Length: 127
Image (cartoon, rainbow, N blue to C red; front, side):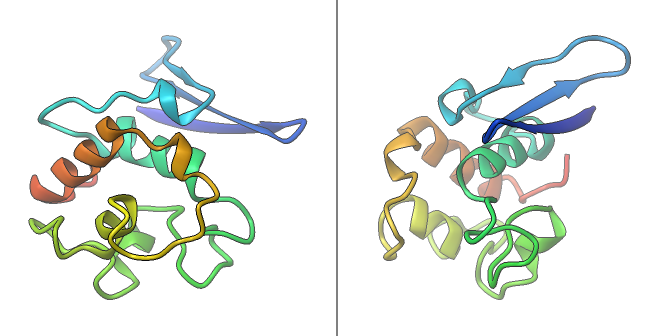
């Protein structure tokens, strides 16, 4: 599966495609729906983080806590603790247990919170 991010006129669009076929277009976080199980990093987690967190000055590659790649999620100790969403700082921020500026909190749904927790619970795989 290929992930393509297009930034045009201040908007970010993520295009997902498998092989030569057209894929899903995510224009806003609400377009992303996490399944109850078998959460995929490439289909769910990465697009969710890109549309809610990885802007310059927030959590891009050049920021203190980057969230812009699978590897980056594991470079900050305690951010993702495989198998334990209740102990992972990323999930604690999403759940409102840890303080965070409320920039995009209104765009994060309960489905996103449950899906991110399920991804961590399932092993936080790069799938």
